[in-house]
Image 1: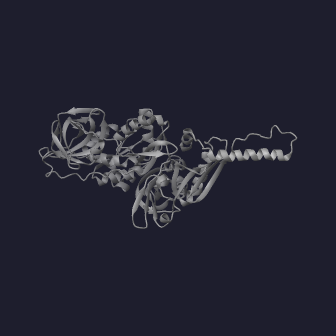
Image 2 (image 1 turned 30 degrees about the horizontal axis):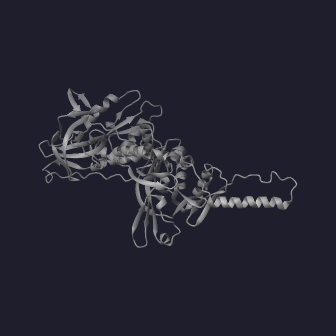
Image 3 (image 1 turned 180 degrees about the vertical axis):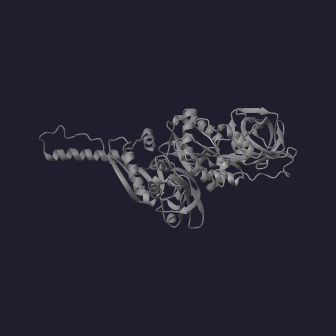
Length: 541
């Protein structure tokens, strides 16, 4: 945006970053295109877990920080306490903090002048060879891949020939411009500017645009030093997705591919289930990321899908030292096998930072302990705020841990987490059987302490969604060679004795035995037909 301050026009590049921890990689990329950040703190709730996490990310990038305290109009606002915490926790001068109320507009006019005064202008030399950092990218149906870039040195204009230092691919620039707020073409982008670039002919695949890659003009590859780049986000949660009707498979595949084009952090590979047919295995950064993807598929493309329970990858270190990471629980080897017994099974952990009011501390600690958490730290932040640090298995985190945390703290707790590495654990594979046939869509890797609870829960819930047959249907949950839970659906029964009134007991027994033999023959040849709607209802939360 353009902002006039003291008679001079300033071009400001503004980025609004998502607050949820699932999108941390997007926050890191956004910082690379900026020279400073506004640290926004709630005057009533104080510093939260995400505030601390994002402060450390911004501090590591050497960004100039401007503290802004919002919601000062609320009756519960405690401004002196918040300013003291900003000084104690972040070592920022509380006198520089801007006090605002976005609701009433109070103090808003002081924010942009403070940004211009406190934050340094971008540095760069327009006379040097082009050095351009790729910050983000998205797919356009007509132009191909559009790049969001920051120019550190030199200039770039339409017609220039550029080369990627990461992939070695060469391109011709088709158009350059800035987001103002929509795409506005410019003749040239110079050192210090942030804008968009697309090529002609266009870049066809979004995978060719490596985030954090450095571009320069052809011939200057040896002169320009590449930027360190970003770490590609790794999926933490995996789900299997299937169409509600197999006739919609090709149309749904097109819709999913279009969404994946614009969201590079989603991994996609084809999958197949005996029960649900052809589908896909999708990897996401977290549970919220998965929910957002599902909502976009429904709202933007009008498609609905069946999604299995979210799972996390599992690592096996075999006795010969070979390592294998299993993402699909159905492909996990049977834990009763001798080779698996002699190997190491590991699951991913996360380091979770939870901010919670002191009055809800007991319930939150109870929740963390129930989810196999290990307490690593507790800090009483002020008279009513507590920061907890726990190591929690990632498998527990994806089981709606965030929702349970909000429920146990009346919505006041906040959660932030980062990867905590792999740890050895006693893991078991739980599988659902219907008449001794495995249902591959319902399979999960759980800790040994949770096997019986999950098994009992599954068979009870699945029984509600399977129709009665002419023969007995047995639903079992197994782990290894052990049956841990069972439910039986009784068959339809015809009253064969209805026509007999005063007959002999042997006649009655003969008819009942004949009915029993018929049921055995029917069970031997009959298959349990489970409707798609049964799986849909079972997998729905």
